[in-house]
Amino acid sequence: LAWSPDGQILASSSGNKTIVLWGIADDEIDTLETEELVASVAWSPDGLRLASASFEEIRIWEPKLGLVMHKFKRGGGFTDIAWSPYK
Image (cartoon, rainbow, N blue to C red):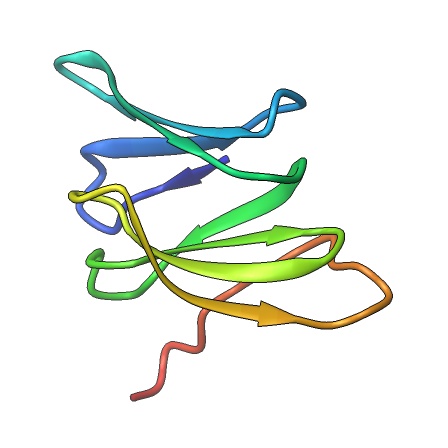
């Protein structure tokens, strides 16, 4: 689970290969479909991007459009993800 920096959207990962975005006023806003189980999610400090970590890759999302902007594949798996607060 990860709250957006403005506290308006909660991103949750689940065991069904999705990331669900929940608005505090609108309930479910959107569902981002993935190819793998997502272990962790984290918002960028400016709230414009969402990172997700799975066993095979890290994805950087543009959540308003539901698009994957970048994919980083590595072996060994990822269990957690975080953004640096520095630019």
